[in-house]
Image (cartoon, rainbow, N blue to C red; front, side, top):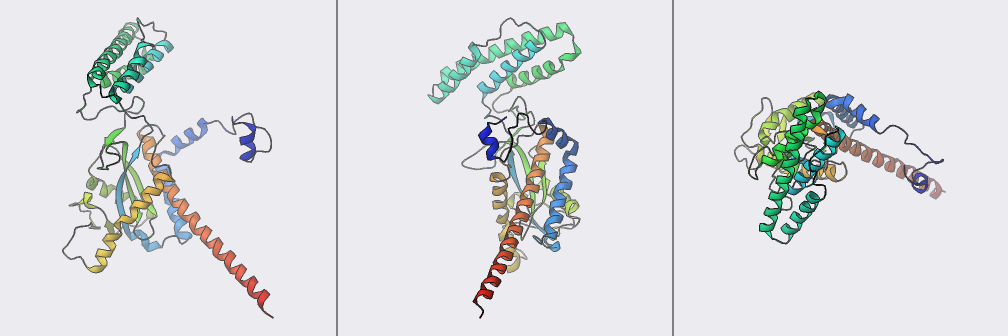
Length: 358
């Protein structure tokens, strides 16, 4: 619980000593909803936008589709950090199950992990690799000790330890150039994506496909795409979701060059670089493809798309859709604020005119 000053600042009248609800209630409610439930929420925001005249009913016929990376809430995956996390989790899990280890390396291993970072910063790579080999051997010894005792016990309740041992072995054996590496002990679904950005060459999370209306930028479809698929292979699925949520099939889709060569039945696909049959109007329409970029930026800065804290692949799917729904609600609220300001200005002008009349 926060201090009394913060409670007064947030509007409380009396000092509260307990949270208003159990913190896990929201988690359970979100799991009951599932991905289909939050997609219904996104569909309702689209209908609300139509009723508030944020978009026209015909706006959903022309859409822009793009992909971005939704990063997972994990630390940067260095070898030393991952190995130390594995050892720490193994030692604590063994203590919970009453296993007595020969050695737990609670003093040596954290010191080694710190030294590896210092050696890397000082560019003393020979010492860094030596310390990393030592840390790897310590973690392997703890893992084998736990594995041996679990096998001897034969307890079916040790499923948690078995899963932890499997992930630790995967981290111990993976090489720098391997595919499908494990980047977080608690989030095996995390993938490494290289989008070609100079500031951030590699991002760790999941690819997300976003579909917005061409004119207004309202989100009409948003879905996580695990497995880091080629952008063109996600287009049909993105357009299908937009058609279901809007209850109308898009007729024109504007995409970037990453979707080049892809065709979808019943939908005209345009991307920059097309020459044949491109009129001046079509060229202007294709040029507006970049309008989706600021929408993605606002979802990342204002809508929490930049960092996903929900657990598992289901958390990835739900967080992506909820970010799209939040973006739509912000657009609707902005329209209502403008309408309110217009009404107040009209009333003020009428009052001023009444005072000035003789």
